[in-house]
Image 1 (cartoon, rainbow, N blue to C red):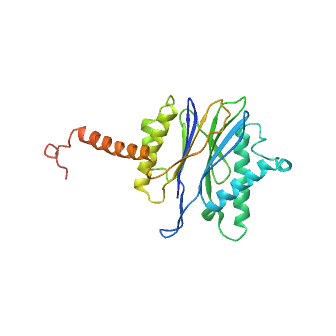
Image 2: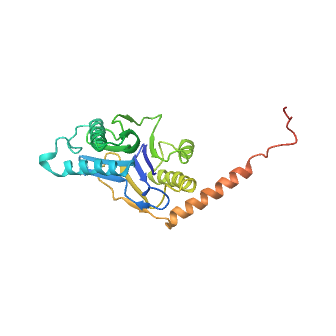
Image 3: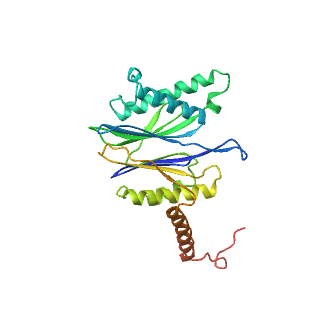
Length: 250
């Protein structure tokens, strides 16, 4: 399993993903689930993936190959005119990979599913964020749904829903994401370190270095301990339930 989040703020886009993959408790590996392509001054595109590792790696390899060879740049995410067209291209590529793998006789629906988060900006347009489904269709982030999650989403989602603000700085948004990931990793062993992080400042068209956060990262440990302590204090500050004052029901 995995956990990945793409978030849209007033300042740009933030992406975070774990790196754990597993096929049972005795077969745990580490793979990067974040890929970025860019043409400096013109576009920056980031993709996060969850689901079948062979499917997601094949999709990323095809996208990468078509972006590097000039004679194969049609179709290419570095040539698509809009982020909407980039999302369509990635959805089509994913369906292509799933259908090809399904020809081996296994069920694509059960075996080869992969879900992806796409975000980026092309010059002349605003930053955009998409969630791409295994069927190849997709939805776009809006003001009502400003972040996308894939993988093991249920443990970290309530934190994002309660604390997200579009005006957050990158530093504040990363802190919020780390709390979300900390809660997820404490509840589910299939999500684990290290974490990959990248941010994109709106209208910069500059690819930022990917940051890797390990289990012993001093800032992460301080956030984890601080969040746990703050949560305990918050619970203690709430009024106690009055068992004696409640009327029993039959």
